[in-house]
Length: 133
Image (cartoon, rainbow, N blue to C red; front, side, top):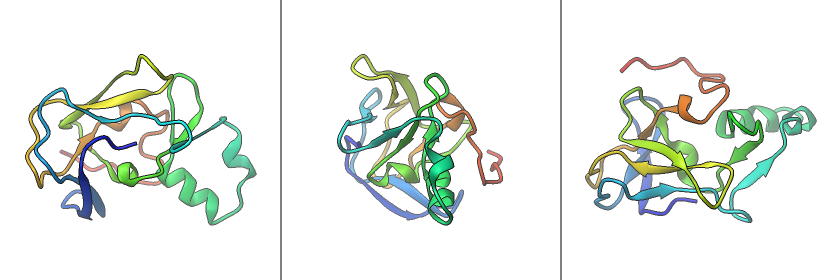
């Protein structure tokens, strides 16, 4: 669940992006898994889906690289784009098995939010061509 004000819009990197809609100070928690809001399913779940639902799920969900469970964000957090030099990073969440996302530096209102998919996803570029920073 997103913990800061954001909006989505056209990204210069890839399709739709997630943008800060307020100033976000360094080390601010930006996203964390919220049971009952976000969805967590076991590693075999996608095998039970038919197209086009499976393609949608695989595009927007991520597979936790430690638990192998899939997580689908129920809000616009699914529009975080990847960057090798992301302005956010993952940290251990003391209250959950998934990592949380925090600001790596001060982020200005209107700035696109990026995360390094490799920090948390088993197949970070499923269905995408990786963009070069």
